[in-house]
Image (cartoon, rainbow, N blue to C red):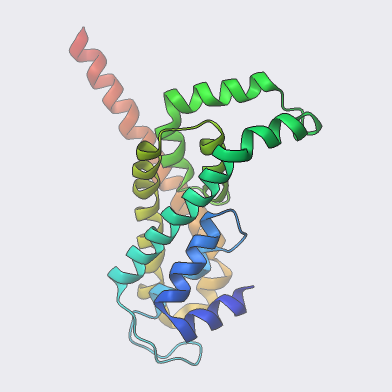
Length: 207
């Protein structure tokens, strides 16, 4: 899979990055770490993987984010148009009941923005968070906003890592999952810290 991704990006550049990130966000197991890190490496201006392609870091990050948004909406609409029916029909085999769907919908109505925001930053979770958001019929505008907000730090951070360490592409590739997991933990910790601080500030203001 990794060799195929590298080959396609080396040949097609921006278009490959865009399409691969759509697939990744639409619940297809394409490792965004490899896509964005290698895309970022190609912005460093050095020959990598047999290509002299020189991409722009801003364009790479923006196309990764846009691909994430489009792919997320594909998964969202699958969940929204047929997800509830699938769960109601087959959910019993996964110990899911109708009231579990109601609880999920209530959760996304109350905390969906935070769930999507954090979910878009976490490895693995980020790929599948859109489907339950669609099943719960999370408002589309809110879903889009928090998908973008969660995707931007992910795509740009990985692209900048690739650019900064382009000469060590092979070692980056092997440790990309670890890098993304650590990055996700740092970002989530920062979000939780901000949320708790804001809630404390509001509580003190009311007292």
